[in-house]
Image 1 (spheres, rainbow, N blue to C red):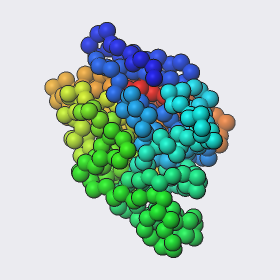
Image 2: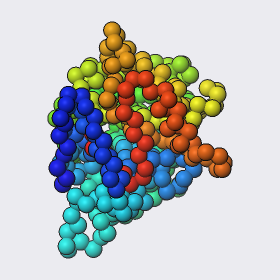
Image 3: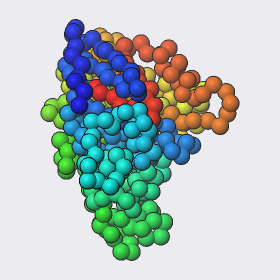
Image 4: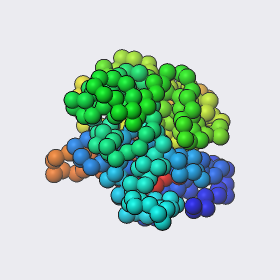
Length: 340
């Protein structure tokens, strides 16, 4: 395991990018490590939303969504970002297979759209027993419409046909913290608005430190709900105490899109509006400093078939131009490793 970075000055943020490794620190040593298995928000079949997360010093991961699994592990291995996991000499598996089966302890699914679960489905025949944690509506959709014996064998422990009981369905309750078996993590779920479909934000905790993974969501103003605001209310004290180490937030489209065509997603402008609402809750008297130095991992950028400048490049430029809060935005690639 690599030695963590130390910090020389209060609230200083240090970044290191080497072989796809990104490390950041804010006043204390990193508390979480994430490996990017899938960074895109669609179209690219082998690079769909999925992030492994564990406390630093641990290789017992949860998968935050599971659009891509094996291909992302292969890319992470090529970049040297699985080097702290030793393959037993007696194992007949590849390193990627060993990590998939032995080091991913559970799956947290934000919602049941295919780009967030197809990797789990395709890898299920070779996976081993573990839990799938999600809101009840997401579990029900997965059970009834995917693991139903018709679309795919029923690898769950309930539902139609003959349940094979490989996966244990755990129904999370909004506002209720749940320990994640096999890990040092707990999770607290929040309901999000996603163009009429339920989605989820997961607040992960270890040793009093937090990471927030926000699944697909539109801005409250467009979605005509206050679900993101409720999340901001809940995490504002954690940001104030500097125990929230980072956020995973989606930006699906550049700002050229009309708000009627967001389909339950965010753009750079809408994301910054939401983060300004959070900043005002954290420090009403000086909101411009409230989120200074905090890490935001941007995910779910949707590729395009057009030959113009990439959506990713446009989004990055727009975010950097709009960032008046001193936030440290990261735009990781598949296979990257981040400590925060």
